[in-house]
Image (cartoon, rainbow over all chains, first blue to last red; front, side, top):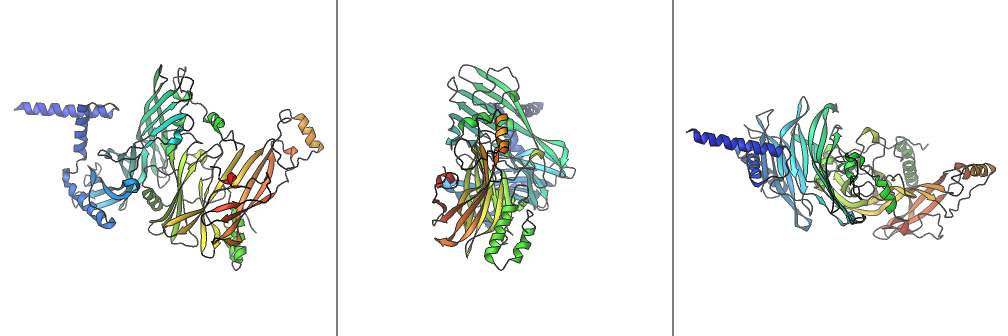
Length: 326
Length: 314
């Protein structure tokens, strides 16, 4: 009789260990690990628990009447709030319009409901457009299982949108190099203000990748790849009543000229301060301005420095070479 | 009477309210004098307006800058404009979408929009939003211009100005304060003037600039003493422009007159007479779709705005 219990415990431990190793930042998931993680994530976000599916159906029916759209819902996620178990955070996608080139735009609905009355207590509706670069998929929507205490009275909840966002436009190939920039996980923090959910931090990119090849280099091209992943931490300092946040990003810098490879760990951080309405940030300066100074002739390449901050060249020097004569 | 403080302008304009042309001159001249980066108030968007524009864009990429202003002559409408970074990594190589919208002031529903693009270059970089204390004094990159650009009796054009910054090195010419004028028609915002620079700065190196360098004894003495400057003589010219409405109309809209007041400065100020300045006049005419430059009769190289290729090099 103990056997099933032992097997169950073993499976549970295996699940927890797999989930834990994923959380430690391992990018390479093997199939089993991935399956176990997906299962656990699915269970934690399953809206079937606590009969929250019916709340989503009712809410999407309201939106369908308001906007004249179908009541189809996608990617629902739910989470009982730890600081107030009477409330649950729900989110889902609802197709909104067809936009140019047959892409779809979606309503992204985020609501806080009372679990006993099933009433919606606070709501937010955003619009997410698909495009050739931006795509929605089955893992697009997820809730961060953590509350961010922006002050003693204000717990913020976080959602992450996982979308593809890839810049490989021809202009990036203008100067004889090819640079592609990708960022695909965007975090939003919501605060309940009356009957509204306000995104105080909106679509902060968490992952950053730049890859490029310098075709003009003397060795025929150096390939560089910067990839970092980020997390948001709450700092003890405050601005305008909310704690400051810190985006901590860590990752790797990889360069090769076909003969020599170089891999180095890199990290960046940025502080975000509340301005009374939002935590403003400028995407093209994240995760930090240094990240963007990708050296077109091979950063750190066979150099003595072991610190990425010493390897930056002055971007202005390449500007003066390429300025247009007028 | 006309000062640098924007507050005095309504007073001045009320006095001359009976005379449309005076009102216009008053508005435009006050605007010209008042508009310097340090003196204009912030055109911050309310959170509801910001969310409405974000949803209208539908893009997860945020705004690098956003401004909103309720229209003074049509208070049911609020104009918004924002920059959205679309690509390019270095400062000086970035590309942006510049979107201008008209929103219902109460509901913030976006009624009309125009999507344009803005590319940085060696003389043009966008400094997006002041996020840390170091940059609090830099001008906001966008500014909504609701001066009375009355193109005909029914049409008052709306302006969006783009403030650019120059890359610190390399360029010998620099333009900024780009003016875009739109006409609101129903669900459309139609651009009639796009990216007209109202401020420029130029270094005249070996080309004849037409300026007279006064060779006073003081100047000659300073030249002799200055080892670096003997072979490199150059003058820096900067100009500030303002747009005026002309009475004559063509294809439904009034002609525009761009008056640019220039002044000189130089690396060796003693060599140039700093009181030299001139005013250039450029005429713009509507062709049914856009305003274009009427070629000036005098092909004078000093008139930097004398041709279309200057304005629209791309």
